[in-house]
Length: 321
Image: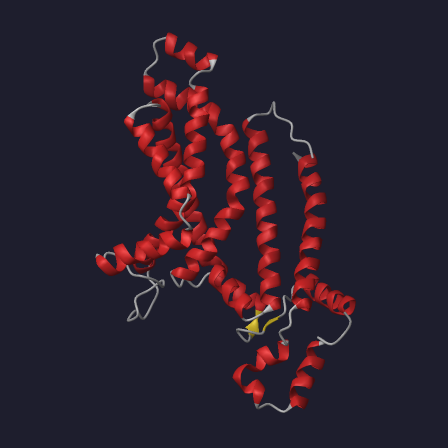
């Protein structure tokens, strides 16, 4: 495992370096003037000398290698830069909103894993039956629906028509403090939408994997010994199917993060997803670069944890590369 960690770190460093260069070049190629963006509506009435002074203070007119070296040096010192769209340090923006994004993704992932394992296993046990056909049809149908469409449909039905849940935000408009019950009530629809949008891949994978495991020799031998169906299903077939399922969790994380961006935007949640959209619309390069770099690092770390979990679950497996 130590060798695996070393190999993954040897790959992660160049990937993060290439990502930072790519984001920096995209920001440099943008036609937006950072000084004009920072000044906002007052940029049209501001003295051009003041705008030139802002550019000089930020060094945006320096050669690109000089700008990148300065940005990289600040990054190594923990300085992520200044958000031109929110007028505050990038580190403060990320620190204030990362927790909500992690909460949304964490709760969604837990619900997706538990639901897909249970429903997929039952569908595999009753393969060919009405429940199996219904689950597969629903999974294929949901997979074809964009997540933002699901979010808007959920708001129209459950928030506007039925009034069961709020349409957005984390707390009520009249709330003077953030309470667990209020946040939980507001997160029901976002978590449900993100869960439904991400569940088909996991559900169909578990169903097919468990169905194959039910035909393995050790499962057939367990049945021949007269073990109960529940014991054979969850104690033998599901355990065999869990190993490749671990890999799916790690490889599917980027799509889950991408889905959370749209969900946070539709439901007006104060997470990194909504901030990323605002930063993109406002050409806020420092904030976009930091969020992209952090997201890349999280995905790489998740893939490493997946590989470690796979080798720990089955010591016979050797992961190269």
